[in-house]
Length: 369
Image (cartoon, rainbow, N blue to C red):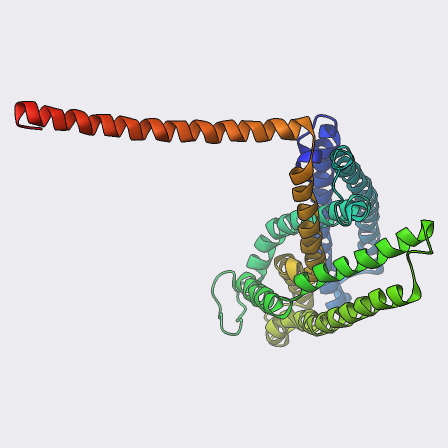
């Protein structure tokens, strides 16, 4: 899956050149976020003391916002479009890596068509999406952690107190706690998703066979039985997703008010301005969201884990039944290496025995070892 795209000459330009272009685009998107954060501080400070500003200052501030918003929109649109192109190129690489190997296999591999047609695309799309989100999160942390660290000066955070970087530590603690709880709440989801796809594959296979032969396949009792199993699996999956969604939505809403709970007392004591509060809220949200990336993508990660499991089984079956000469050569090389190791071990044993015999004869002749 990885090797087919990133370690072949045919796809090297797409894999590495396209990936670099996406990273550059993400960098400028994060830079736009930093400019938005600075604008929030200036704009809301102006709103708090309008008597010190003229209408032209207000209009100028909105014009500046429009400029950075337009650049951000264009960058976001381009990144989304190119990400889809990149994902499809990855899918193509995986597909045409599987097809020649699959054609050389005489044994029937369960769900081969679904693995090649559907799972290859879903794997490329999800990995690409998650990969970009992880890189964006790292860039966001690199940009906003210093901002949040500075904004926390003089504030008192519950439990943490007034230490340096208290807002950063608060974001880290709530994010780690959220990830730990999400792991416990969603621990059964990957297995359920995997089992569900197996039932889906059986139902789909019966329908495909029925397209050519409705006499022997696709009888009402058979389809009813298969769909009953499908309904049972989906209802169980929906139940487990429901209590995970309950936790995820609750956590998300609580994170909205956390920065205001921290900064609110300082605002009402006039220690900070409204612009600083909005800046703290924005920066805290950026840092906390980046640290909690896996919480907000838990269902996607669950789907990815089940896809990985299915594709890995498919690859193992291809390697097991493949008649490809390249695979055979690899197997022969492995056998030669094993045989060589066995010979080396045998030689070592013979050598030790000969040394023992020599020492024994030496002792008998000279009376000493």
